[in-house]
Image 1 (cartoon, helix red, strand yellow):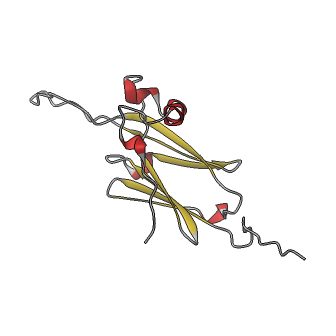
Image 2 (image 1 turned 90 degrees about the vertical axis):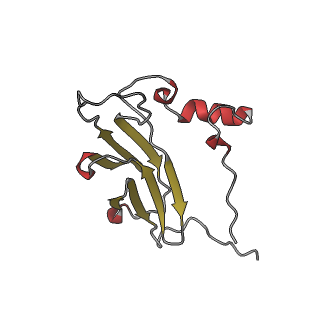
Image 3 (image 1 turned 120 degrees about the vertical axis):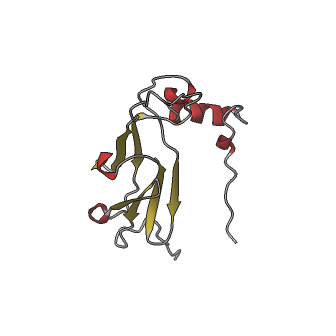
Length: 146
């Protein structure tokens, strides 16, 4: 059985600690709280296994051609745009809660990754970026005491 840390950030209304409040201030976009209507911050899950890091980005309704994935100085940046479809004159919108516009998320990669083998796929509204670990660059070493 594996333990999963409780994510109190799921409660968007009340931060449970001062540290959580500071994290939310620096990590979340103003767009979530009524800022620019032309950008948003998609939710991300990051998973580590023995062979790779996986970044899952929830961006439904985006064409795979609208994604840009760049790697520069060990920072992986995922950006793109979710375009709003033309309003139909016969439709009456009462509420639109989905987010549209441009987005960008950057991730600092550890030193033990193989940047030449990064792969991305987009299935059912989830962009999955797999960043393989380089077995030659192990971050953990054991030092024997003499």
